[in-house]
Structure formats: structure tokens, C-alpha cells
Length: 178
Length: 178
DNA sequence: TTTGGCATGTAATCCGTTACATGATTAG
DNA sequence: CTAATCATGTAACGGATTACATGCCAAA
Image (cartoon, rainbow over all chains, first blue to last red; front, side, top):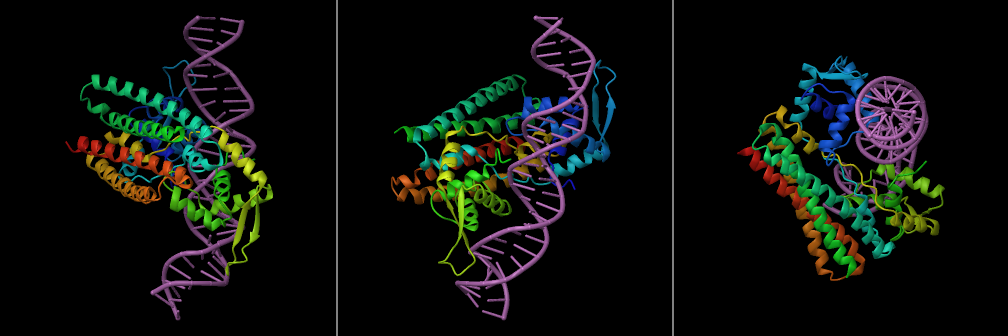
């Protein structure tokens, strides 16, 4: 059945902080955790329905909004499911970095083609790095707020990863250029 | 149809270095590029059939082997497809790091639970780091061999990423411990 | 008034994993 | 002899993306 869908838990985690609509969840994913997680809106709605059917969340109409908004709330069973999942070790997803696959097969094209790809990749990672550092700076101003403790940690993870990626790009570009 | 399947190109790239069986390809993936790419054997065989049907590879029985081995060779059309793909920019796959999702929702469990997960994650990354450094060392002995130039680059990428991951783990563990 | 953002959902499709099924060969 | 590895494949399933379809509300 639903053995490994981690979308369920992403949703449950978000709802554990308070009631939200599907649209809200999607926004929070893209605005706060996009650097390590993603959800497509076309998947979110069906999974929310299944979670409702399973009694892990409840659905109600938002009275305060003039729009047709469905607001979801996590149930006690939902919290239990979330906590159980948090206790299980994380299952590592095998990575698929297409940029490195192209590099690995680099002998079958010109080095300049590869360099162009890496340059583009570097720009993207640098852009991301700047964004994350911006968030980190804002969070520093907030002081030792326990509410943002875990957000801080994920931001830091993204910064480490982005810096490593940029450093590798520079190394690779130097190698390909010389 | 087969718009975005990168498995095709992983196969074509491997076959561009020489004839191989499906089993060979799987072995090469797990032994050399597992740190940034993966393929399941159950997917490899059907895709090889489709590539044969499309005329990008040819299939023949291996006469030299006492076993029932099917050997695939890349065709001119296959090489063209590979080169075309190498010219296209890499499509970034949105990441899904479950470990960070758990950290993000860390407020809903005990810090010690999180720390245990991170410790396990750290061990895995450190193990991987050691392995990659071992390969890097072997490759250094080979000198400036152009054949291993691109392999070297992917190994280096893995080392950068693993080091960054380990560094973050230490930072996170210090934070959670204190 | 028209554009963009809010908001929800379905359908088609696909990409890929896991488990299952089978059998030959080689090394200990 | 027997276990591990070589070797190929199919079937069931599921998780997720993209495109499609619809419509309201607010701001310019």
C-alpha cells in the first residue's frame, strides 16, 4: 500500500505546526525547504485525500477566507504517525546527478561543452548559496530562538552542500580550461 | 514516449567505451558511479530492449563466454544520440534528503533521536568518503592519463560533497548535544 | 478590465523499484 | 557438493510529474 511515500510525512510535519491548505503546504515547501525537498501540487492533493480517508488529518472549509479554501488539521493519530516516522532512520535515496553523468562521459564530447554545463551549474548553486546565506543572516538576528533551531540546521546543510559544489566546479573548470 | 529517461543515456555512455552486457553495465554503475548515479537491474533490461528496437544499440550473443551472455554494441545512431544529449544542459533533479526533512521537523521528537539519525548518516558518508579517497589515491598513481580524467572529476565531486556532509553533521551534532 | 495569484482537483503517463522466476557456472 | 556469482528477464506496483481543466478574487 503506502509503504514508502514520504510525501505523507512532509504533509504531516507541516500540519503539525498548524492548520494549512494544500496550497499553503506547497508554498511552504518551495519557500523554505526547496533546497532539499520538493512536492508537486498534483501529488499533494491526492495524498491529502488519502490522509483524510486514513484519519491522520481532517478537512474543513475555511470560514474566514472569501475563497474556496480547504483547511487541513492533523489528528492525534496523525501526530503519532509523524512521531513514529521521526524515530525511524532516514532511508537514503540513491542520487541522480545528471551533471556528473555528463562529466563521466565527457570523453565523447568537447571539453568546452562540458565546461559550459559546469558553468551553468555553478551559477545555479551560487545563486542558491546567496539565498541561503541571506536566510541565515536573517535568522541570526532572531537570536537563539528554539523555534528556528531546526530550520537553521537545514539552512546550514544547504550552505555546506552549495559551497562544496561551487568549489568542485571551480576545480573542474580549471582542469578543463588548462 | 521516452522523453526524459536518463537511463538510456547512462547505457549509451557505457556502451560507447566498448561492448557490454546488461550485467556488466549494472556492475560498472555500482562500482564506479554509485555515489552520484544508480540503475536497477530490473529497469536496465527493458531499456536495453527498447534501445535495440530503436536502433541505437545492437544485440548479439557472446561467443567467447560459456555462459548465455547477450552483448550490446552502440550504433552510429546511438553515438549521435549520446552526443546530442551531452550537448544539452543537465536537468537538475529536485533533491529529496529525508534526513533533512526529519531534522526540519525535529521539534516533534527528542533531540537525541535526531542526533542518532545524524550519527548514522555521518558514518555512511564518512565510509563513502574513505572509499572515494582510496580511488583517488589509486588514480593519482596512474598519472595524467586522459582516459581517467573525467572519472577523476566525478570522484572529486563525490569527495567534496561527502566532506561537506560530514562537516555539517559535526556542526549539527554539536548543536544538538549542547 | 484584464492580469496575476489563489485555489483545487483529475487524467495521462512514465519512470523506476522490488519481488519473482529461472538457470548455468565456478570456486571452495 | 554447495554456495556464491553470473546472467537474463517479467510482473506487479507505486510514486510522482506534467498537462489539463476550472474558477474566484484582488490589484493595476
